[in-house]
Image 1 (cartoon, rainbow, N blue to C red):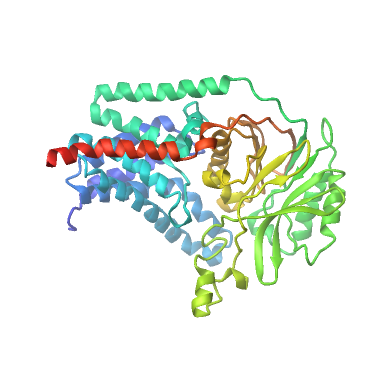
Image 2 (cartoon, rainbow, N blue to C red; image 1 turned 90 degrees about the horizontal axis):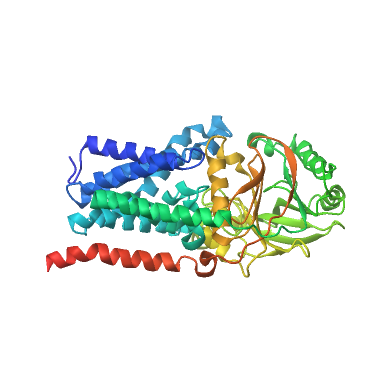
Length: 497
């Protein structure tokens, strides 16, 4: 057997505990089950015979966790099952195994601490690993451990310390009882009670005055397997126009109508009449819609704003693309170095990245919005990189790729967290759902459920003052992690002296 191998029973236990930990993610949100599972996992890893055995346990725990939490990854391969279904289990396994390497490294590193300090050291190294996977190879901060608190009182701590602060709070709350017994259990309860008290206070505070504007969220509910069917493209486009022009059930006509990501199934340069048709359906309102922008061999995943006169007033090009989904990493470099064009975005093989975040100015009283296309709402740093503070956040997405069980709800949950972090309302418009209005404290005010067609007229909520996380970003968490890491590792150095 491989050196350092802990045995199949401990590895299986780690796998199972990782899977139980994943139940804390949306749509289940079983934080009360995830937290003891994490505590048991920390205890299991810290009882390992050495760093190598701990790494194996971290790896198996991660495979169980990511395998369940990100099981939606098989859905894109089932859109055309005859061609792609065979790849689904391999994609899920290799994604889960790759992300699990971060946990394996965290487990191994924790064994640099003295035995009594290992649970706390693991809490810190695991939080560092979760932070790191949001940046390495463009990052994938999906299903972070701290996401188990989204929609709860403790989740409001994200306004102070962001998602990585939530993760550190969670790992410490799980590790303290393991390290200190009853005293640690009391300390853990006090930590979570303080977080809950802060969250309750924040959610109980008066809401800012809403803006005097009406938005219409349009959800066409086009199934992914039919979305790009040329025989149904006109049907889908007419559906969007009809939902846009429909009279409001109550209240005034909308000031802005929003369609989802890649809503328009035609290329604008080949169909110059489209902006005029969209403006006519808007009946005096601006219309923002997702489309594919093409120049020569290059293509962009874009969001356009059409003014009431049918002119394109603004365009935003998505800049944070999905690796292997929207582009092939290093594809352009392979073209430059070796002449390989099969993977190069500049040769029409995938999307090109836009120049970066920008604000869309809709004019008074709508103000300025930061557009986020699909995957970009997963990254706090993409929101923080805005050239100026927006008045609200706008996410357009096509969650039909994510299936119907977990992916769309996890994506929605992360959008809610962006609102909490920044203290800004977020408007979310999806192709098949969930389209939603989210206030500046991350609460769902209105929504069109998954799998339904419809248009929803809403009043834009007000914004809060910039939160501490909006001002300082990850800096306080990085300092806190550095201090805790030094504290946890110090006893090992002292005992070795």
